[in-house]
Image: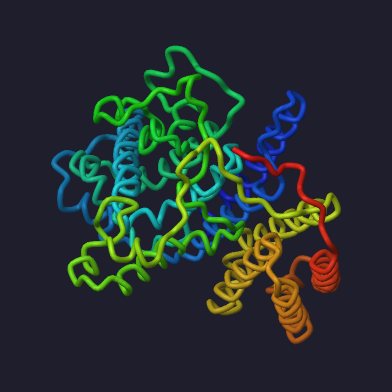
Length: 425
């Protein structure tokens, strides 16, 4: 947890700088694809996912180390070849995990958040799941285990493999010549994120595109079919925590409502999107039929409110970075403190994105959260060990929580002009 947290301290500002560069570049070219509310929602999703991983809130159904100990036929010696094999094995497993998520109802809940943005930009790459509590990923690494690839090599290569999937989430890079036959490019992944019938459920590759060509899931991007992004059942919220569980909630409700006992059990492993016939009739769910004519989700936000969202995003990143940099210290205060801090992060994200959704009681949630935080600071005289760094941190945070409450109340009660980014697909 601590090592991963320190990696994220380096990765987060780097990702943010690249997202800001993409926004600047799009603005300069007259094609800004990074809209404030969508971007904040995407980064908020990345923060919740990273926090969950640092807290270790998931278990593997079987560990990769166990597979190596019981299945290894040979043990490859440490060399660049070993790391290359590990990388290819991870990508092979990633292809099938990705394909599984797009195939069955149950597994889609773990992936819907990544496709939930109706834009396509670097920020949406950070929309990652917090709803995966039991991991089966190691089972797909059996080829690597048979070759005896050490667990520590997988541990080193896995974050690199994940971060290498960031760059191709952009509309500003066109075809890339001969590389289109080897690696996943922005063109390939634009197809994957599109909801056009011609593009649905294609191009599952994460780094190498030849898996799709090999297993029959490849689709080329064409100028005749401009990609439209999102999901066919729009999420209609900026709140990543809600998005993470909305598909599962729909499955639970459908299983409860259907009168067929057979459907109650089979709905979980039926093809993605399948619903019992009696439920479809009685409890219809909106689905986009014409991808070229629908209203994208948006909520009104004045320039002042958008400026506040940018400032709030920076503050949240600083607070999360403090947690990631001081995991060991916070644990020394008591392991419960680490989870309390993690809970604070989740509530902070929930309150912020509920405010972006123009939730009627968002200002109350923000106020209660900030009162509790101020109470913690006053009671302990610090913020989770902050006195070891500076005694100024606690009073600065009190001021931040007070100002945040005032700002959210003000913007909640002040009519907002429609965001100029609102558009019809």
